[in-house]
Amino acid sequence: MLEQIYWTPDYLGMKSIPQRFWQKEQGRVSVPDDMVNFKGPLYRRVTTAKTFPEFANRQEELFNHIFDFTFGILDERGARQVFSSTCGKEASSPLYSLGADFGKQIGDPSLRDFSQPDGFFVAEDWVLGVEIKFNASTSLDQIAKYILAFATEYAFSQQSKKYSLLYISPRPEKLLTEHLEKCGGQFVCPGFEVLLNGAKNSIKGRLEEKKTPIHYVLSNLQIVSISWQDFALALQSYLERYCGTDVPNLTHQKLVQGLIHEIFKHPHSGILSSRMGNAT
Image (cartoon, rainbow, N blue to C red; front, side, top):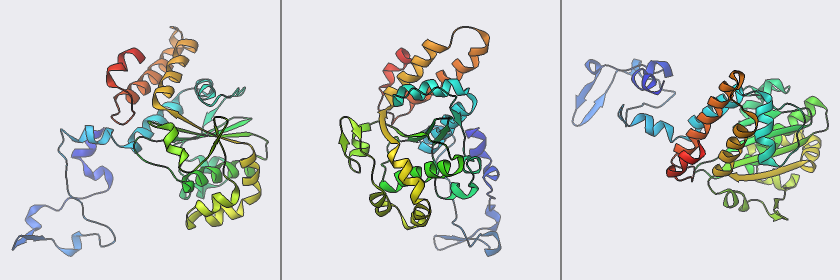
């Protein structure tokens, strides 16, 4: 797929400008203005076909798609078992992945313009947001966007639930301590005013609109931060405990084994590649 995208930029909505239309003069190149989109930038290649797959696989956003595909296909029991263990929850009902169009499924199709969770899962008694990190930092604004999504779900379902925000990163402790305090081994959820002050202007109005459901969410919210090593171990534990050798579970095994493999081979997961064989 990456190879085809590299060699066929048309798939990305781009069109080449053949060199016969170039005008070269005094070390500069110009092209006809009717071939240029004045509302956007010009692009050029800076990688080769050989180096592009490695470059692409390092990007956090592309790994997010692998994560989303996995839990979009894995059944709700599998998602519940994996995330129950990582969040220390005893979820009794199936945990459904809502995917990229999660806003539409919780009553607000425009929510995607304000909040883009890496993972958003809903059960009868639990809502889970997952934020994936490799070498990026976080902020109160990002936390606020997840809480906005939780509050939207609560306003839509009108059901009492628990809420969890799970961060997965190479340095789980360092990631959140800049913005949140810890008490008894748990991260302390921010108050509404702290959240509002840390949010960007683009979502402050949305937060104000949902002030009442946000207060409910904050009183029922846990924030958890784990390493990629811990998450890979949770996936491996699910394989060993719930997936046997019967044919119906072979798809689950391949999906989860593939995700574990992607975690270990990612250069920013913080896991030594020499340990890949032990985990997979």
